[in-house]
Length: 416
Image (tube, rainbow, N blue to C red; front, side, top):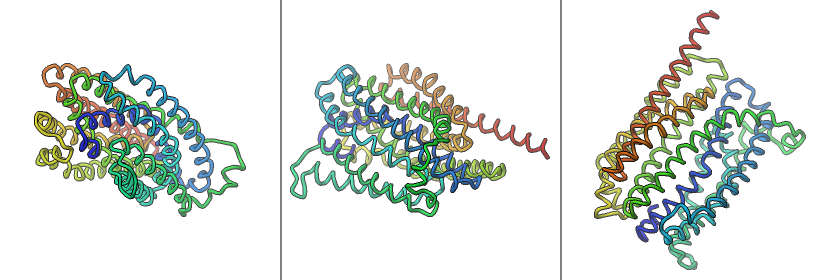
């Protein structure tokens, strides 16, 4: 986004449009596959991970293959539909260039994600993080080479950003194979993967993962529709929305790490039958999430102009951005506490509740209120609506977790 914005407002708008469409199309598939994380954590808490790991990996790889086929087909269809969802021929042309390259990174990413998810579920989160850092550095290096024409290569401009993504995912995919050499993965061999065709976790991955997939798919469908609506307001409104979405997504993804840690620890306590530990994880997760959100909250409050300068937005566009900054401040706070609740519910495999809570917040509150407010506040109205929808989702998650703990506490008292 930073590099695209350095070329022109149209490049910034087109790149944000392309990545939003791409992520909106495939995010549900990755979210579905993330069901591997709480399943792995549950097996480890119960002490069954070593014996079940080959079956789990075999099941997960087959699921990843099916999802890859679905993703490529969906993105090809999206490419054909592009002229009907964009009103600007120039932006459509740039978006089409991005998608033709980015479409091929999805199968590689799903393959790497499968192994990384099992490692994370087993509590081995350091090396997956290191692999992602290497992939990020690879992206920066290839941007320097392809986009700006260094090391003897011709200048490709913003179109080279897509190639930088491709090389980053290639590096991530190759390095993810090394995770199989960790101590928790010693039971995985070529023979253990191929001697049986049984996939006992195939259905469980779909049972736990489908609500998560629908949850993320619903969220990014909401985001994609916003892009379509806001694109009709003009390039300035779309550009500042893309910046706001990019900055908020960066802060949101950072918090997703704590949400993932919550789901892993809750899954392990669930497998071990430790209700006291489950309550402790829930309480600590919320406290840590709030503490970790402080730097981003301060950034939204005091560094709005500096963020605008970093994305090369000024004039009327900067004024719109500064208005959105204050809304992001409250949205970030609500979102972090909501993610702590989501991590708890995913850990106990109550993913259907997560889906229903998100859908209610987005489609019953955020979208209609945002649409109504947009007539007066333009793009800011949609962000206000999203903050109000997130507040409803937070209340939904708190109520669901409290009911679960109360029911299981009653069961323990009866058994006692």
